[in-house]
Amino acid sequence: MQSELSTLCQTPLGPHHRSVGAKMVPFAGWEMPLQFSKVKEEHLAVRSAAGLFDIGHMGLVTLQLDEASLGAFNALVPQDLRKLTPGKAVYTQFLNERGGIIDDLIIYRLPELSDSQLSDAFSGWLVICNASNTAEDIAWMQQHLSVPLKHQTHYTLFALQGPHFSAVLDRFGVRAEQLPARFHVAELSVKLPTGDSFSILVARTGYTGEDGVELIVPIAFASVFWAALIEQGAPLGLLPIGLAARDTLRLEAAYPLHGHDITPDYTPIEAGLGWSVKWAEDNAFIGRDALNTQKQTANHKHFVCFNLSGRTIPRQDDTIMYQGKAVGVVTSGSISMSLGHPIAMGYVDASTPHAPGDILQIQVRDTLAEATITSRPFYSANRIKG
Image (cartoon, rainbow, N blue to C red; front, side, top):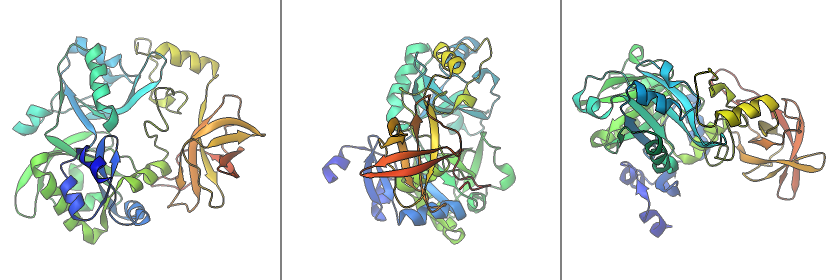
């Protein structure tokens, strides 16, 4: 394992994670912390207090667009980027001609920034890519756009999530009234306990089902800011969070993970992401014809969420059964630490019942476990679905 880890990319916080005894594992070509303490403890800290995530493996790509190049960029996604105002972000996907999901992304139209260093790096538009897809996403954009792209490698990403996230930031001079609205981004100044201050970008986004922010931080301040957040946030219940709890949190929120729940073989229509497709007549995006055919015929796979009784936990690639026949596949599964029972997500064939309350089975090794379809999400900060 050690020799394998030595060949991987590292986030700026890698040395710190190792120094505090985090369990480090390979993930998407990176050495990442799997857990700092017990997974359940980390998971529940995010639900009840706050958690701090190192997501420095994600790709930050900026580009400048004029009216013509914005049209070309808009054709790469099924959203309508032309309607974004400065400071606004949107969830979307890069699609292939079959409508398959090359990657899912958050795209920001950046506001005017005052800090000279931030404004030099972050002007125009920002694309946040999944770690393993950053190089492919850049190549895809370069194939279709004639504008220069910049991979911003002098900055890193934290995620601060949970009901006490704002109280943690307040200890650094960031007031609640300064925070951007949901799916907006703003430049804010943070003040360290040492008295030093610097500017960061704060985006009101996340991947846990809790309120919170994602922070774009200059690498020069990354280690000291992380350590200060942990120290100042500890009395509020803040914990550092690893990949294992990040996965159980996003699963409870029914957020798809690229490479598992969404891939180039699945479309947004199939994945239950049809809400993110904008069908305006002048929105001619790659994959539109394929998606329109699926929309019209409904002859496609359906993404479903399952609750299971007992303790049998489905895993990726387990077979979904109905009336003795294989009808689909599990893409993600785990025990829900907030609900106390196993949950799973996956796809079933077009002819298979897929409404909430329908009962199917999942073949888990030598056990055929009863699985009841439920609406997504399993968990939200405002309600819990059993």
